[in-house]
Length: 157
Image (tube, rainbow, N blue to C red; front, side, top):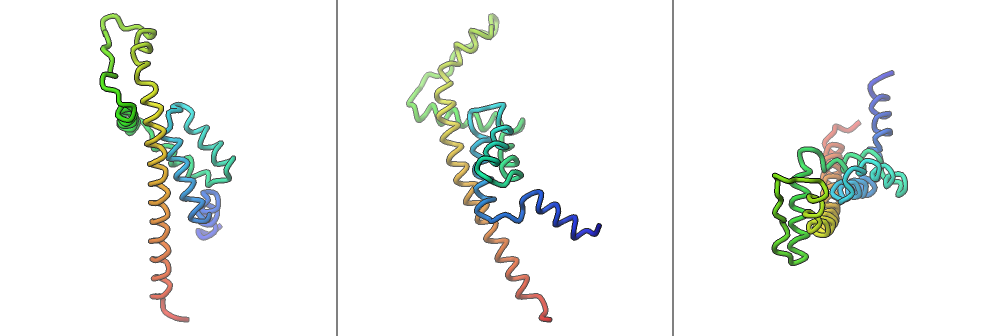
């Protein structure tokens, strides 16, 4: 099997030959899912969304991993802050007594952050998804210009 056939097979499996709009929408949906408040089921949601909406599976799942161990704390902290600001709350961060920390008390104390978290992650997810769509379409536009320039610069047969 030659290298060209392997490359073609990989491109087909990865969906790299899909239309730019489909790939961009796949990245956008994956980004929204990755920032969504449904922590713990992002991969499942990305697979389901890619199947249900007939999106590029590789792009959707890859973008859903925008929230990973390195990025999840900054993303969710910022999103919760956005939700707090949008809801007009001022004193939402509870005082946690770490000497007598129990799960029930902690969950009760953090209840005031639940709605700002849901609102913030949803809004930030939508904005990030729209930006991701625009960025991916721009990358495809640049790539097509480069491909066109390469074809024009190649020597004639």
